[in-house]
Each structure stands twice: as structure tokens, then as C-alpha cells.
Length: 282
Image (cartoon, rainbow, N blue to C red; front, side, top):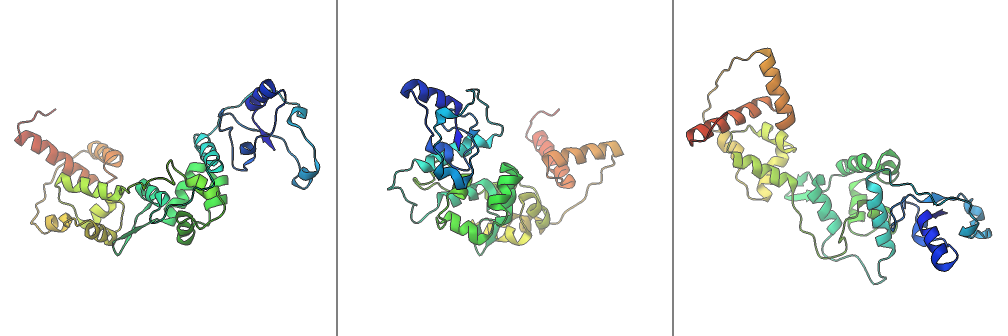
């Protein structure tokens, strides 16, 4: 059994007697959704719970409060309380899944197969474990598979834990449009107007060369890497000291996904464009 020290003090002042709150008893609930403080645990054997008369006023404990330890705890507490307080008439929407759309927009949809973007089970599993930590992450997402993702996104599970852990605002409301991070990244590289090899561009975007073709076909993007690659190219040899080359490689690792040659070429072309257009240089 769990209770919030602040709720207990408020109940005693308002009603003359504190009581156990149902929202505090949700197993995953870490904080009081009203006050944001950590819930206090009163250990009672589950087999004895129905045989025990335990008024909250009989628990000897101070009213000192402890704040949240982890950034996700307030978010999870609010989501669990929202699910608990939903009207009975609320149901899953038909024809779309805001949960699936939100996960796709968050960058978990990297499989592009036959013009279809699907959620990547492994990437979502790793993301959940990294966000929630090993204990909760492995308990609910260690065996995450495409089949389980489908059941979660289409409301085929009766237990609410995974819904709460993955939930967002307006999950059951008006359809949330999908924005694809991979598409946005691909268009950004296209706007730069640079010549990329197909393998280079695929690595920069974060997909395989085959997925790069599928992504372009799905959104009617001309394969600019093939057009540029078909032109005759020339090589400029630049002599650098070891220290200078290491500095460029370090900057490329921070701002250019580790592609030293592409990073250096982009900086050079940007500087040339500024000079040719009358811009100032440093």
C-alpha cells in the first residue's frame, strides 16, 4: 500500500481522518499525481491484505516529502492517473493510431519496405530501456517484437502498463499527423546541393542504401545522389599537418556524422559560395 504524506495531512485537516487513495495504489505509480512527491510504501503481504484492517491514521510516519528522482517519473504518474480517470465511454479511435503516429514521428520508423514505413522493434526496445532504465525497461520491453508493437498500437492488449509507458497527450483524440525525421533529414541534404555517393548519403541519413531508394520512391524525391554521381568529378589535393587533419576529423565527428571528406567539402563549398555571392569571410 502507498500513500502521499501531503495528501494524508490535507485529508486529516479537511475530513478529520486520512484515507488511502486509489490512484496511489497503481503498481507503476511512482509519485502522487496531485503533489508530485514520492509515495511512501507500507509493506503488507498480499495474501493478508484482505484480512487486515489498516486505517491510514494508524501508520506512524512523518509528513516529510521526497521529490522525484528521475525526469520521467512525473510524466508516467500523470499518464497513469489520466488512464485511471478516463470516462467509461472513451474508446480507441478507429482508422488511425496516434500512438503509432507519434512513435513514427519520434524517429522509431526506419524500415521502409514497399513504400511502407513501419516501427522498428529493436530501436524502440533500446530507446525505452535507455529512457526508463534497465529495471522497468526490461520488464515491459525486453521481448518487444513487431507483433507486440502492432497489438499495442491497435489496442489489442488489456493491460495498461505499456500504453502508459508509451503514452502521449491526446492519445485518444483527433488524429496526430506523422512527421518523418528521415524524410526531413534527406530533404536537408538535398537542399545543400552537394554531390554524395549513395553509400555516404545513406549513412548520413541513417538508413541502408536499399531503404534510401524506397524512401525516395515513397515521397517522389528524385535520386539526386545518382544524378550528381553521374557527373565527372575532379579531386583537389590539400596538404595538412597531422594536427590540422585531426582538428577537421574532430569537428566532423561533432557536426558531420564522422564523414570527414564530406564535411570538409561542404565547408569549402559554403565558403566559395559566400565569396562568389559577395559575402564576407572570416
